[in-house]
Image (cartoon, rainbow, N blue to C red; front, top):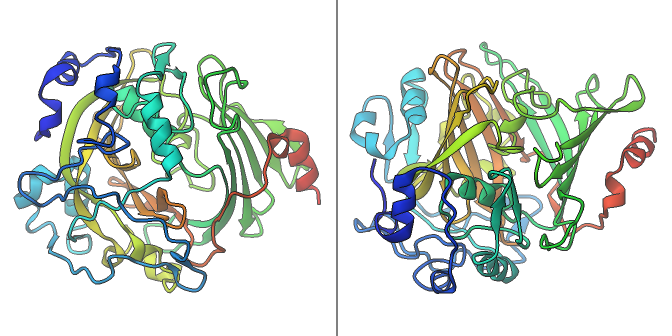
Length: 453
């Protein structure tokens, strides 16, 4: 495994060699590197020695006109041409820059699945308040209860100088995605024949319910979430309400379901771990949502270092409004002609199921973008240690905000040859940020009232 120079020396290198949950205090001198030789979120500002990864120069500047209602997000890299394509025929040449899951995908779908590799564009950027919070968090945030919770952090990116696998994971779980958001998207689960139907979904998020300050007791709520199935008609009216707790071992995720046929709200304690995800036909677990979400307590998390991998990145072409879902959804996998891959440094974290714990995934290898902590790739292994499923997140910078978030994520089944693709918004209304929401909009009583209208 090739690791970057940042990881090989000093305190961080020693912690990685130890492989455990070491908790060394990050002092002010280390934190001072943020915004200097490190980016404000802790990535290496410099490019790589080969010049194939450029230096980070601030990412995409905020542009209020970045989104066009008819076209979607304007592609700032539309003029880029592919450098080369990786297929089953030449995959061995690029083995060091591919995950085992990517290599398996190329072999499983030889002849139809390719990775088109483009110039690397380090486009990730965030509002100044996120950078300021990360710098403050660097010397205050801490893991609690064996890493199942965090404390003394604000807003986002609690560990910009991560020293363990759990700290990298928490940076993903608490990355900045706005303050309040309404989004619409479509999801499909193509059959082996290629047939599918689209499920239409509306999500509501209220992030940072305590104004982004987690230094005081805020009821242990990390964010509020509501999900409504809009179509097809036989599924429409199903609603999910979630209070995502900071420490889900101390206080499990609070969830309620409203089923239109029953016309009542009921508690849903099983909306967690490996229970089936919404309308996924068993192709995605609940904790596959957002590549990984929920409590980390079933796994041991090992930080293996950084790698340079060809990962999905800047997928503006996939997200374009001129694509119909029939252009995207193909038999076996998403249309590779619409995807973009780039060489980036990623944090490699391995999650191994703890002795005595039950989950359909015995091991997960997760690859986090160093510039945003968005999970871009996940390799999932079953309880026979067989590589089973491969997850990919097709993210972009929503640079009217700015922030990095997915505009399509897929979980591919290498054994069955099927997949689920969600968060597609090509034919849906635009995301809405900074909408008027309060915690009172996320109560079981309010869910009942809204659902019966």
